Length: 354
Image (cartoon, rainbow, N blue to C red):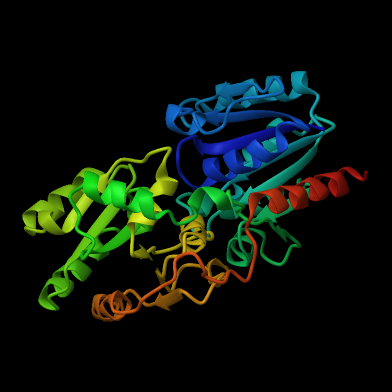
């Protein structure tokens, strides 16, 4: 099978590209897969060795839409693909559908979020998108209903490499020593892009309340993004530097789950929250905002709360006194990438009528 994956966001260590990366690493040996995206980042490329003559096409989607459209059209025409899988967050994926319309390939749209910036434009284009795609995929029921409305769609799990995120005591000790964090310190971890959706500023409010509760804690924020400097400045102006550790995104992100004692995701909206899935596989208790889809709960270690700093600080203190067996957390819905990739492969063949 010849597949073209189209990523409509920057290809770095964030949700959609990681999803594509995980499936690529499983399917690349049996199928030819090319990828169209913008700004391929070396950190994520190091985690996905290219095989089977994969081509990467770096097309700047926002700079010049006409040039982007014509370049994509040319790639599609020359590629003779069986499946074109378009990943995005809104009905602006209609642009990619139109560029692929003269192809014999089966076209799939895949939505990964429940909110998006181009709301008015997406509303205008939603009818076109829903009637010119061969299949509709979504990261969760919430994401699918948001974009596709009453049209049929299939939820595709954000499969992960389970072995990579398993708890490792030696890694925990190494990272805590590296950053000077005592074993007695309760480490609250968050991984995500620094921007409005992820709501890192909420954790400053929580931190101020935790200080009053006399809990020895450290909040570790890992990621990059446009709001990173703003959050750093807010931490400094609030004299909270000793309670926060901010780190850049890394291709070894899986190791940091072992360093954490609790994972938090105070998002204002989410398509699913893949990091919460990974955290549970790492044996971590998780505290998630009520806006994270309920499908992110795959164990009994998850608590959903409204974005009320008092409730979060109280729950964190409670969890700090609760012991957890990190190696024996019961997962009741599998997100293992091997089985997820097999299911996606079946979906492709069904769409192709094979």
